[in-house]
Image (cartoon, rainbow, N blue to C red; front, side, top):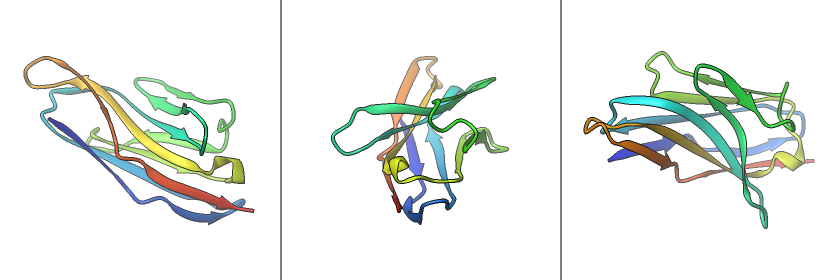
Length: 118
């Protein structure tokens, strides 16, 4: 099994910054993609950013959020700056990869709440 452990989110004032982290562990041979999604109350789970050999961002966060991987490559970060109240959501880490049995895996984190006050 593959486990994802996300850092705690938090309450941030509008214009503030927050960094989320997600560590993948367990039966991992290789990781193909790591990313962050978010779901606001009453909304769907939407892509925020992904990182493979390239990075991809939702238009609403481009220029404000930065996704990166740690030196171990099993960690992904989401640096969020210039936060807005509309960034309030539960943020989920997502990882695609191959396990040691050479089977694909597709795993979600438990989600972490980010609240931006106006």
